[in-house]
Length: 230
Image (cartoon, rainbow, N blue to C red; front, top):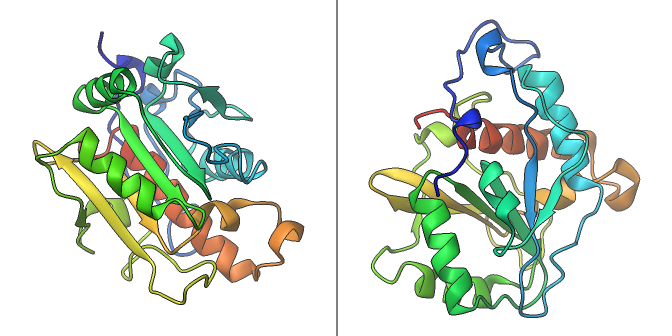
C-alpha cells in the first residue's frame, strides 16, 4: 500500500499573504481536506501532550497557504489503516518511546513510500527517540538538516533554522533529519519545543513573536510534507 496520492502536490509560491512570508497555492491542489496525524505510540510517553497545539497549527496553515485543512488532527496508531491518508505524521512527548518490530516495519514502509514524520521533543524523549531512530533505519544516520534546505524556506524564510521556544537545558535549537534517497523523510526538532509555541497563548505565556516563529516553522514543515520537493 502506498501513501494516498491525494496530498502529493506541488506548492506554487505566489505573492506573500503576510509580512515575511505566506503563500498562495494553485486551486487545483486544494481539492482535499488535509490534516495532521498525531501518532499514538507505545512506551509510556505522553503522546497526547500540548492538546491545543495542532488545531492552532492547522488554522495557521489554512489561513496562510490556502490549503484546506481540518480543524483538528486525527489520532492514529501504526496499526491504523487511516495512517496512510496523512502526509504529515507528528509525535511529541516528554517520556519514553518504544516501537515493536511490527510497528517499525509499518513506519519504515510509510516513510519509504512518501510519508513524512516530524518528531518534536517536548523535553525528555531525546534518549529514547534516538534509540528508536537507530532501530528504524540502522544504516541511515540522523544528521543536522542544512540551513539551506527547502524545509526552512518553502513558505517562510527561517535563515537560522528551528526557532528556540523554551530553554530547558539552554542548548541551541537544532533540526535533525533522516534522508531517504535524498528526500528528508524524518525531521526531529530538538531543544526547541515547537508544540509549546503552537499552544494557546495563555498556556505558556510565550511572547507573541516567539509563538509566531513557532507557527512559521510549523507551516513550513507541513508545506514540505504535502509536496514541496516531493
